[in-house]
Image 1 (cartoon, rainbow, N blue to C red):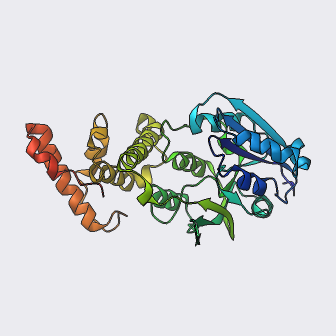
Image 2: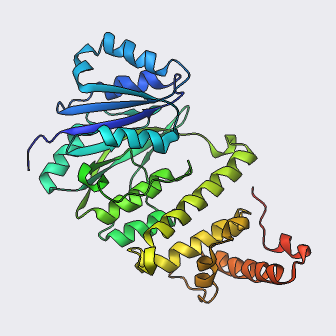
Image 3: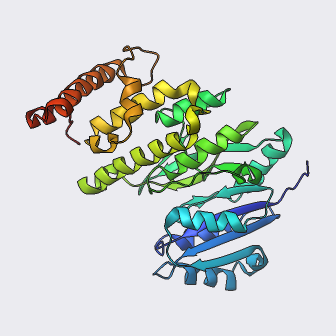
Length: 329
C-alpha cells in the first residue's frame, strides 16, 4: 500500500454562513498534502459559498488546485452526498460537516493509521463543543463488527458519525442504500460500510470538534420529526438488508427490532408500525432478558404497551390509546 494514498474530503454545504469561515479555515489548514476537497453547494441561499471562495482567493490560495466546488439545486443532505461521492477519486474518503471544525492533523493522523494497519476504516475521537465548554468523547472499541453494529443501532456507546471516520472509498461502491429521511442518515451509511469493512482500527487522538446543539433547544414538533425520521431510516435499512429474508444483520435481529418497537411506542409513532408486521411479530414472543441492551424495566413496559396496542387494533377501543403511548418529555 502507498505511504501517501490520496484522500477525498466531501463537504455538503447548505445555509451555514455563520460557521463556514471557521470550519473551512480548519479544513484548508490540513497538513496532509495528497488531498482533494469536494464542496457540494446544495443550492445554499446564503453567502456560504461566497465566503469559501473568499478564503481560497486570500489566505488559502495555495489550496485552490485541490478544491472542487460543485453547485446544484437543493437535493437535501443525501442528494449532496451522492454528488460528492460520485465526484470523489481518492483511495480514502471522509465526509465532514460544514458547521464543525477539525484539527489540522486530522487527515495526516488518520492516514498514518490506515497505512500502518492497511485498514478499511479508521476512527478517531472527538469533542462535543458547546458554547462555553468542550467535552472530550471517545468511541468505545469493539473487536467484532456485530458488536459495533449492535451498540450503534441500540444507541449505546458507539456513535454513527461519518465525520470522524476515514473510509476506503471502494466500500462506497456497488450496492449502497441512501436514506430518505434527514435524521440518523449517518447511521444508515455507517452500518452498511461497517458490514463491508474487513479491518477497522481506532486512534486515541481527539481530532474533530463537533458543534453541539442542546436537545432542550429543540421544539416539541422538531423532536417528534426527529424520532420519526430515526425510526423510518432504521426500518428502511432493515428492509433493504433483509431482502429475501436473508440479512447480514441476522445475529443482532432481536435486539435491533426490540429497539425499533421501543422507539415506536415510547415516542408515539405507532402509526409507523403499519405495514411493518415483522417488528412486533419478532418482539411479541421474546422473553424479557438482560442480554438485550434495552433495560429490563423498559422491556417490561414495552411488553405492556404491545399488549394494549394489540387490544386496540382488535377492538378499536380508543380508551386504550393512552395505555400504549408515552408522553414525549
